[in-house]
Length: 205
Image (cartoon, rainbow, N blue to C red; front, side, top):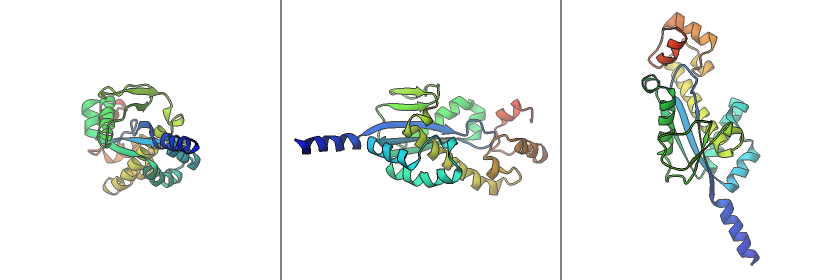
């Protein structure tokens, strides 16, 4: 009887209990928006929490990089998707963000029975059960893990793009509209990876 209970507990711990999705780069003025989805078992949720997984914004870049391989190793499944600056300009940021999320979800081996979405906005194209959690990255380990996967993936891309688009300090500002970045746009002009729809709002074009 005791063995059966222990077996049941192990099965419960190894079952996928949470599938969270998050995006990064929504407010940037350069480059794509990234999304990641992470599936976790009850047991691995606990392990990642012990390792320090929390909202990616509360972690240092070094800590996020250290956690990334652990998250990928302990996730039952994960997916990463992105939507380009051109798509953002053409479709608008919300639709482009949803597109990046759907692309991440399509990488999963199977459709999750329930999806936990960070923030107040529904993922409109998703034909499945979902719940929205405001500040979900500080409440659910799966969302926090997804935010780290998306953030590190996008930051790594920004480092690579710095080589091609030098003169904008992309490595430093990660594509966000810092005062320094906006000054450099005035000096060097805009690139094809700048979000023109965002720059129009800043009266830079």
